[in-house]
Amino acid sequence: MKAHTVYKTFNTTERREFVRITEDVQAAVDESGIAEGMALVSAMHITAGVWVNDDEPGLQEDVLEWLDKLTPPSWMRSSTQLSEALRPNPGDFRHHRGGQDNGDAHLKNLLVHHQAIVPVTDGRLDLGPWQAIFYCEFDGQRDKRLIIKVLGA
Amino acid sequence: MKAHTVYKTFNTTERREFVRITEDVQAAVDESGIAEGMALVSAMHITAGVWVNDDEPGLQEDVLEWLDKLTPPSWMRSSTQLSEALRPNPGDFRHHRGGQDNGDAHLKNLLVHHQAIVPVTDGRLDLGPWQAIFYCEFDGQRDKRLIIKVLGA
Amino acid sequence: MKAHTVYKTFNTTERREFVRITEDVQAAVDESGIAEGMALVSAMHITAGVWVNDDEPGLQEDVLEWLDKLTPPSWMRSSTQLSEALRPNPGDFRHHRGGQDNGDAHLKNLLVHHQAIVPVTDGRLDLGPWQAIFYCEFDGQRDKRLIIKVLGA
Image 1 (tube, rainbow over the protein chains, first blue to last red):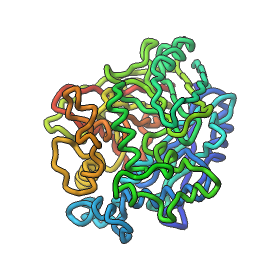
Image 2 (cartoon, each protein chain N blue to C red):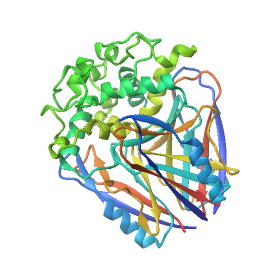
Image 3 (cartoon, rainbow over the protein chains, first blue to last red):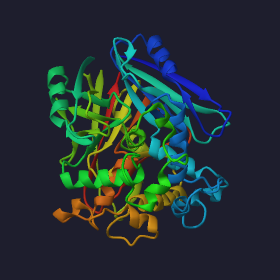
């Protein structure tokens, strides 16, 4: 069994960003020399996620708008009564007592999930025709790390 | 290390369907000859999911009703004000500008997640007594693929 | 390739609880003798989850409050109209026809996800500085099992 590990650091311009990383994951597979196996792609932070979906900017705008309704940031006015109702009862996140303002990003991490496992067949990421891999930053503008670990033979 | 890959194609009668695939995944494990390892079960589409839960039709109805409230389809009237509030602000999904009508299915894919990893012990899927594996179709009635990849020894 | 499997049983005092298991997973890695690989951490029940996030009690309270709004328990009065709207249309979960009252815990399992895969590098869980692993009980006070399966070399 072979294993190959790559760490990527992201420092996004925007607070929230979807960064396409399909090619980075394929590059890690190429370096590994693994033909059959799996690539684990996992954010090493608790306010970011990894999402496998369509590389379509409209969809990403839809997703962020919808996530903001379900997990309203404390630094943003809610657009709907719904989002008001979803705010924590004490008025702000208990998590913010330590001086943070990223409680919503923890919830986005929960919904999106912080990792994905991509099958590797014949040395290639075995994805469907529309599947792309994204690092989803929900509290960026500072260095954050991602691990890519390829296992196989 | 051994690896064994199986592709399944689904073409569901209904637009949305939960298809039990526990036995298909076990069959892939049997064919692989792997005693100790993991089976990655991953939808190759961006509007389908894989869910490990109870094989109970009432629960599946509950889940679909609840998902439709949280991720309201544009082709369905909302049953609640909540779902109206969760619709995208431009009135319809930006993603639909390309002629699609399956934006909600992308969000369902995000919530349900498109994959699961099942442990394999002694040549058997090492699931709890109530755990069954489902392919969750959210935009069907056409050919869609799933990959089952078993890795181990 | 080596494989090592550990089962843990939880019987929580509270109906819902977050139990830190980072050290249990590391212990399983130590016992395995595996230096490079992955640890699959997976609830064997359909009303529990595994979550990788911050070990911060305020955040866990935030998460449980928010989950209860999105997936309102039938045994709890809703604090918001939102949660009323998210209740199943027949008034109660169809799943409860069999005498259960844990429908909401199935939905929490869906949102939190029942498993996580942790990379193992140099014999250590390769987690970011704030990442801890939690078993998330949503219907406890009885024996429930978790599987930790370490694979690698």
